Image 1 (spheres, rainbow, N blue to C red):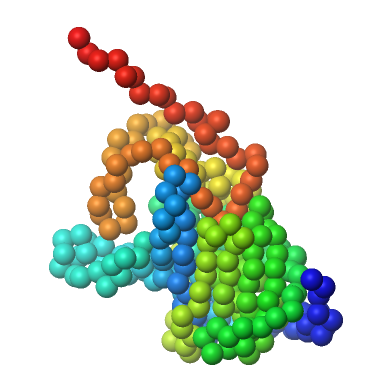
Image 2: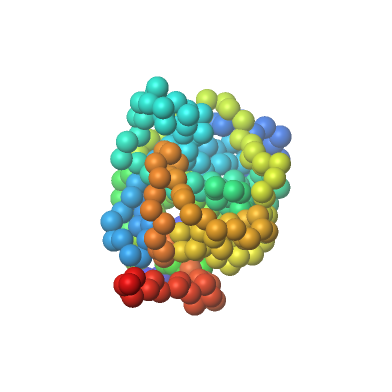
Length: 292
């Protein structure tokens, strides 16, 4: 479908002014908070979808996309494990991913995955090649317009609103003349659905970096491999994160529940043909011989 000339003009006129706004203010205080239900298929071997609750905090010159569940567990993990505090997010599962735009470095976004702390930086300008489409819909009472893009192995359809003129959105999405309120990929693995928009509470947008155990790179392929190793080969993942050899024999989820170690193929937002952990880290087949 051909691009609508009217929206093409808006795209060219609006984005530069937004980028100027993003870089000309010193404040990092949250002025708008947008909450999304995030549906995702975590493993190739398990077709079920899990759900996270994430929040996009937008400031005058930066933004952060963080897990509401992750924040709650970080503050109350010991109390939740000991059952002194009831977990209000039963049924949700944190992806343990965060994205920071224009912070800590202006003009760049930083994707962060935990546990450990592995991150990848991308230059914001020109990251997505959007194709504006005809059609509109309503999301959270806002009229939204359609756009599509193919980015690192996935084709995405998004709906953005000119009623909120922020060139931002969930995950890494940005570069449109309005805020993205809905996004999904063509394979049905990921879906972001805005469920709430409210005035920001003024808290600072700031990325907290741990003092140790940090991997910071400009190579998204390396991040993808390490993330996939977390469930495919935990021992290799441990080695990549720490630089030390070791054998991982036990694992726990963010809620403190022990999980069985079974090789699984993680599905990521970004797909790279050169990243093949199954081939690079083949699993040993268990012996079927009976002991005498």
